[in-house]
Image (cartoon, rainbow, N blue to C red; front, side, top):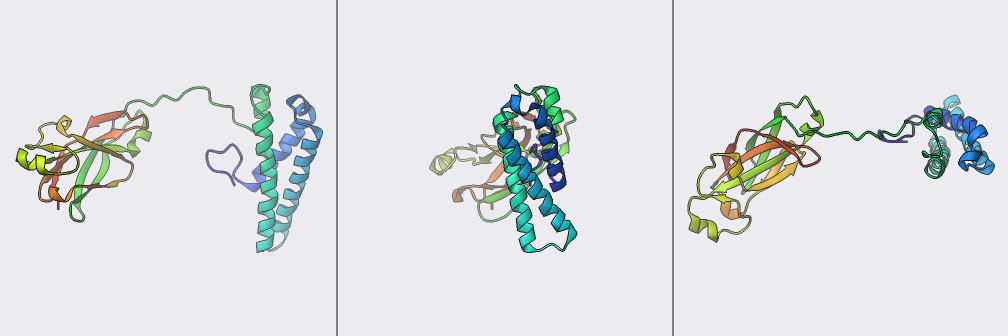
Length: 236
């Protein structure tokens, strides 16, 4: 079976219909595309076996062996189709009219631009286990330009430790602040996630200190949108 991004139809009947269409088109154009008579005969024989398997399954009760026969016969047919397409069905030598006649979608030559996100994300912290915080987020202002960007955020965060001597004695990431941040740009550490709940781990020494967070929606190109509101929690 094919997946949603595949050119091959998803159902058995549609796959058979496409294969039969190919055989008809190949009668007049196959030779000019380098598809020999033996290749056409091989595909046609595989179509016949796949059709017979499907007809037998429809006419009687399905069994394990019958299901396996269908998988085998359709697998051989679609493998032959994929091989022919990979080696012979491309533009050129095919024209757009040829491509459509085979039941294939025309290649999209227009690059889809991904705009900078305009969505805003809101978040909060959930207490989990020692020196861990779970950031839960949601979109509170969705983008009208490109909603595809709404499935990922970049998390910015820092830990407030007022004593600079204590900061220097701590191990791990250097994301410490001496006071609560006034703007999100002061946050030093960042992470990107698609999960609606993202666990942030802190060194053991950070327990009892306050972590500050802020979120920005991020698209697949790494471009980020507007800042959300900052929020904080005491690290357990």
